[in-house]
Amino acid sequence: MERLKLTGIDEGLSVLVSTKLSGADQPELVLDAVLRLFPEFTCGLPDKPTFPSMQDDILAAEGVSLGEFLDTIHKQAILDTSLDFMSANLDDTGTIFQISRQAAMVGKVAFPLPGDNPLGGVITVEIGGENLEDWLEAATWHRGREDIPRRIGDEFTMDDKGEAVTWH
Image 1: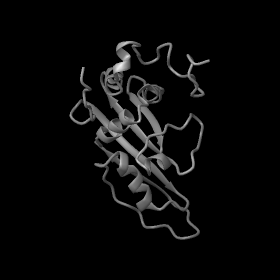
Image 2: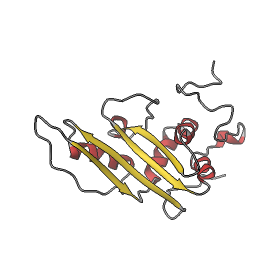
Image 3: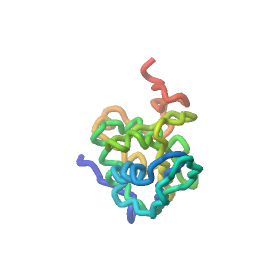
C-alpha cells in the first residue's frame, strides 16, 4: 500500500503554528527555522531586538500546511514516536504538541519531553478537527504497522517521561 500524503489543508482540520520570541532571539533566524518545516508559514516580523531586550513576541500563522513536516518525520523514520507525541494532548477539540526549534533549523524534527525547555525554543503546533485521531494515525502510517498495528493510546505508547514501554 502506498503512503497517503496528507497535509491538513482541505482535510477538515484547522492548523495553527506558532513560536515565541524572547530575549535575544533573532526574528529572521527563528522564522527561517519555522519555514524549514512549514514553508507556507507567513506572518510579519517584529523589529530586530537590541540589547538589553525585553522582547516578548509571538510569530503565528493559521491554515499552515503540514506537508513538509509530515514528509520529514517519514524521512527520519520517527513515525511511531511522532504519533505518540502528536496525540499525547489529544482531546475532543484537537491536539497540541511542540517541536524543537533548534532541530528545525537543520530541517529535522525533534520532540522535547514534557516539562523540558530546549535550547533555542520550541515551535508549537495546534491541530483541530473531527476524526483527528484517525487522521493522526493515517498521517504517521508506515509499512511496519501491517505487522505490528499501532493505535493512539495502545500498549506500545511511550510513558509520560518519553520512555518506550516495550523496550525495558
